Length: 167
Image (cartoon, rainbow, N blue to C red; front, top):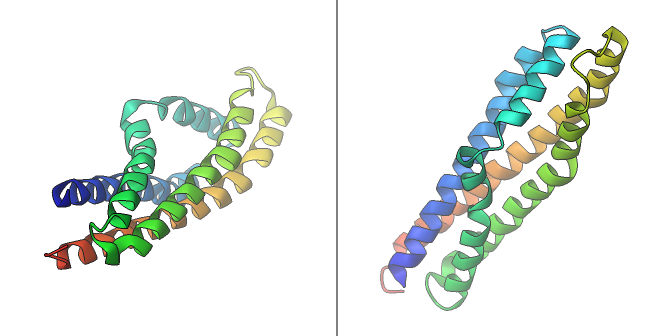
């Protein structure tokens, strides 16, 4: 069971790291870069990004940490790395919070932006961008921080797990 706990923690940490990296990159590079474009370029770019991101390369590291963190919590509670248990629970709570931000804040904004027609005029593009950009960027930063915090607590749980040789 110790090997299963180690594998579970490491796989969850890899998923959290990939998500933290993706959302942080949007916060410090993608959105600032897109903010320098005109309304049409901004709307079209975000529409294409939002359509392209729904693939296995995104969905596996985004979804898989949740069941892995639940399993890691159960294993830790059963005596496999009990010192890591509070950190695994914290990682799960932080990851769930980030997951909820994505589902309740960013995805609805993505869906609304996706409905902007390709032939929208300047006023429609300006309005769509105004309804999307600031809120999406703010909530993206929140989820980037939450995923990063989840990763940090997971890394500490891995450390504690590794230091409990006899557990």
